[in-house]
Length: 181
Image (tube, rainbow, N blue to C red):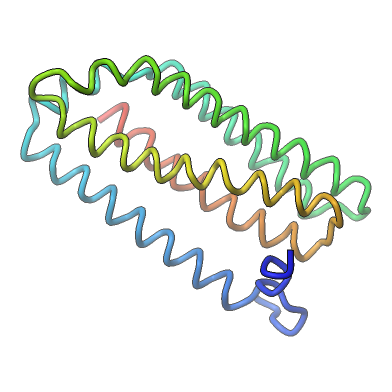
């Protein structure tokens, strides 16, 4: 909890230098991963087209709605004016985050059998790398939300909301790149 509180010191009107360094570094890493995926898709267009046919686009679309709902709930937590309300929004946002994880794991279960097909290994290696890195963020942040709900401070909720919206933003870029292009 202290590490989260340190990201949003009262002296820093912009939300804390550490928070913004973390946000920009995460965006840089995801940008590199997405560029790598796109580069390989240009090198192996047939394999990437075939690989996309095996993805659970319906589940991913549903998961997009789940993640955006969680982002809205997190925004409500950040702007709540009472600890009781903030706690409720934090717990709900975390629950939706965990639902995203469960649906993504269900999607993975249907995709893993295709990952060993000849010619598709490169596609699925990049797919699982990019989505797995995103999934790690989605799995970890709801834990922080629940910990924050124990002592719901406005500053902490604001920092978590900022980072959660970065995770939303990354997914909104990943979804069309992975499933629709």
